[in-house]
Structure formats: structure tokens, C-alpha cells
Image (cartoon, rainbow, N blue to C red; front, side, top):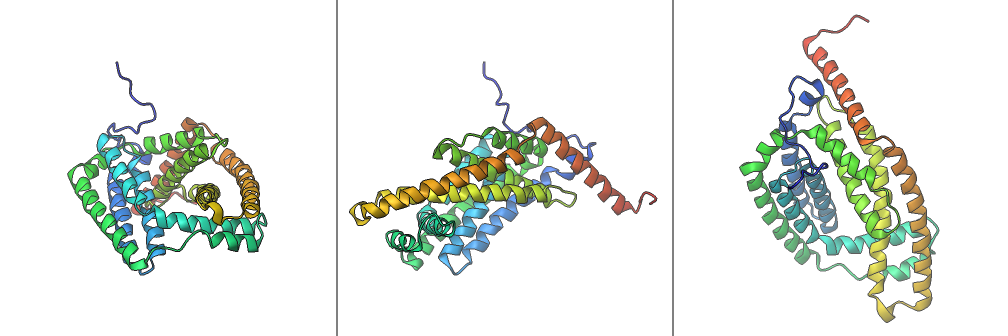
Length: 310
């Protein structure tokens, strides 16, 4: 006998009589998918290749986070396709991540500026901008065509039937459970779950009667810390391939600086995670629903002019 995944988002029909659920009906989710895909189109119009990659990857992360609100095989397949498209952009992003890591370690005074400059010279130059941008554009336009077709065929209809609040609660539960800071792989998994929660909360915050803007900002702080940790991990792997080009004394100082800075970041991430995810998932979901219900009630009063006496 197979059992349902308790963390999979529900597709049970929405209970339209509940104000909080009326405030987050699935039509808003379908519209946000279109907005996320439009952001990729806008990124493609940017003249700077680095900015284009950054903005496109950011939009794809948002898109995948919203897809996680839906538990169907179609949504999972769409997530995989989006991940494949983003992966095609990873080489240029990895080089920039290495530079960002060196800049962070120097700013945190874990690495001297001269050592940072010497290490940066070993990262390698970006590929020819025009050739790389053309390759990225082909990848993204092909993916966008497929994504739009999938939404027209099934995904938008599924979005309209999705229990969004249930999906947000389960996304919170996954991020809360990922509290293992013992290894880079665990930190990477935590970061992915935090990114998902951050975009889902931003989606709720942007609704007409939504809430969650402050929480999205706080989650972004944790995401930034985890992102810096991952940048340093990317730098480690990149420098491993430098071979004899990286002098041993510099390699030792870089390793020491990376260890110290990642230790700082883990300590900060622990504190931010504990503060953000102190409540159990059920309590978080109930509090969120109450906030949305209050916002929906106030919005309804404003629409009808039926204000309570002051």
C-alpha cells in the first residue's frame, strides 16, 4: 500500500467561506506564474550578460518556489525543466560567486586584500560576452516556450485548485526541519528551502489583502548569509582545480580564511534560523491564516464603506 506524502501540498478544493482562503485564491497564483516568466523575458533584454544571468536565475528561483505550492507530477516536471535551464547559466554565475566570496572574506577581514587579488586572478576570465549571452538566450527562450505551453495546458488550472496556505505551511515545515549546519551539503539543502519560503511569503505579501512582507525581509537576511556561505564553498571547489598555479602558502591562507568566515556565517545562520522558525508548522499556519483573515476583513470593510465607529 502506498501512503501520501504528508509534506506534499494539498489540492483539496478551497473553502470559499473562509476569508483567509478567499484572499489567496489560486487565480492569484496563476497570475504570479505569468509575472515570474515575464521577469525572465525582461532579464533577456538586459545588455549586461552578468546582470542578465543574475536576474534570470532570480526569476527562475521564484518560479520554482511557487511551483512547490503544487504537488502534482506536472508541477514537479515543470520544476525540473526550470532547474535545467538555470543550470545552463551556472558557469558564469560560479565565477562571479568566487569573486563575491573573496570580496566578502576581505571585507570581513578574514583575508588580506593582496591575497584576495591574487586569488581572483586565478578564477579566470568570463567567456566572450556575445557568445555566452547568445547561448543563454537560446536556452532561456526554449525553456520559456515550453513553460508557457505547460501552463496553458494544465498548470494554471491546477493553480486555481491549489490550497495555497497549506502549501506555504508545508514549505515552512521543511525549512524549519532543515536545521543541520554540520556539512556544506546540509547547508545547501537549507538554503534551497529558505529560498522557497522567502518567495512564497513574498507572494502572500504582494496580494491585495496579503501579509508577510516583514517575514520575507527577515528570511532574505538568512538567505543572504547562506548564499555567502555557498559562494565560499564554490570558491573552494574552483581553487581545487587551480593546481600548481596556486602557491601552497596562498592556498593555506585561503583555506584558513574560508574556514573562519564560514564558521562566522554558520553561527549567524543558526541564530537567524532559530528566530525565524521557532514556532511549529501548525502554529505558524494558524497564525498566518488569522492575519490574512483580519486583512481580508479590513479590505472588505473598505470596499463597502462599512467602517466600525471609532
